[in-house]
Image (cartoon, rainbow, N blue to C red; front, side, top):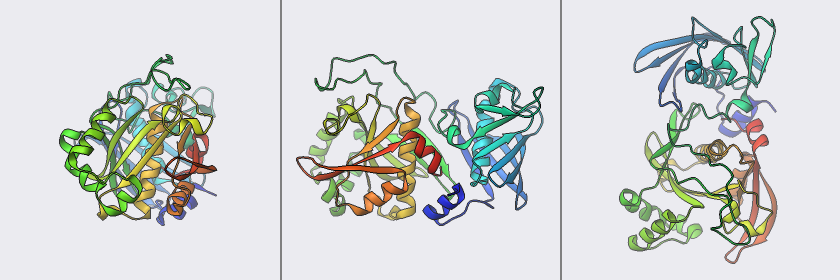
Length: 361
């Protein structure tokens, strides 16, 4: 199945032919805007701006499974151009959803392309850089807010469950830490750490919705939920997150390290396995298209955050068929069913290679 067919199956919208502007957030802190000006069904000009100043442009051509991005002028020749080139590559893959590869003619030896392309082809003196879609979306050049990523070395901790001691974990993030524009929804999706000093009322309202309380069992007072979040702040294995569309809060999620979580004893957990729980509290943003966007973005962030993470695990209720359907559309495989003390659960697993090869981003 092609990438385009997967996008149409998931979203009902083909991106080929998309026009307008896209936004890209580089890990360097740059906020880049790219305008797409189609010449015909298969070609377009891409114009890059920073703070309303034009800084680069490129010509894009879509040719079935491969696309061609010709960078104009001197852009891409200097190592400092890596963020701009990465934004152009993301815009090109958005514009050409069927392309599994992007060829940048003549720049296989350019410093900025060497950070993106794992292979070159063509003239040895001036080879083409060839960027693979599945590899590109694993690179930490875009999407993560500057200064928020802090992967730790593998230092074994003596604090945690004594039968499955974890590595020393990095600190929980503060503020906004992931942002990505979604062309099929025409909106920006972002994550920020929950802050109980400001978010307690929102959290309380969401947890006391009847449909949320059925699954989370946290229909409690603000004081009780404040204690819940305070306990979470002291727990290095998980942290709470507010997810937003265009900076409007939409849902609450908890990201955890699976080895020391309650899930850890129920399978052969590895040090960098991750997992998550979530809810959509803003009822204006319910629906399959948007919920699948959260599944994909959460999984993308968790793989991006720690390059040694090879699996994202989950334990939804075995009877929650809608949730398991979403899992299937985001490359989560059901491995088995098992019994928690409070529920019959399905163990689901998303493997890194399968996710980036099969799931459109």
